[in-house]
Image (cartoon, rainbow, N blue to C red; front, side, top):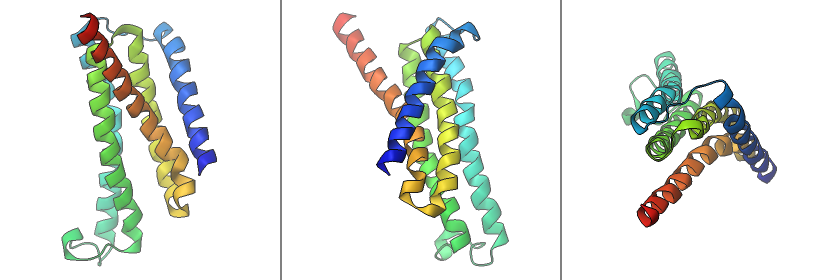
Length: 171
């Protein structure tokens, strides 16, 4: 599990660094706070996409199963829907952290720093695919996906704390 987590961390760092240096030559990032916020909200549509994927997986599986069709309040989920429910729940949790962190970050940083939001959103998707594919094989198999999903949002959160603190201290 630690090896997969280390690979996920290395992958995140590589994508974030490469994006920071490469994307500004391809994308004209907004330099003002309102433009940065609007840009981030639009990019985070791709984070919400993964919530929709999770909802779709659960909804489709529920309609296909007599045991599950009544809804989660009326019985224990079947084997066919359990992983989908876990994926949706984890994706919802991670989406709240990611989108919230991206939004706050975009109110504190603009311009080329917004490449990090694009990279974080890409990593969110890559992490969700890996997490879902690895889930049936246990924690070690989903570790890369978990880390790839979590690290960018956590870094955006920490960067926002630092930037906010610097603004409080230095104005």
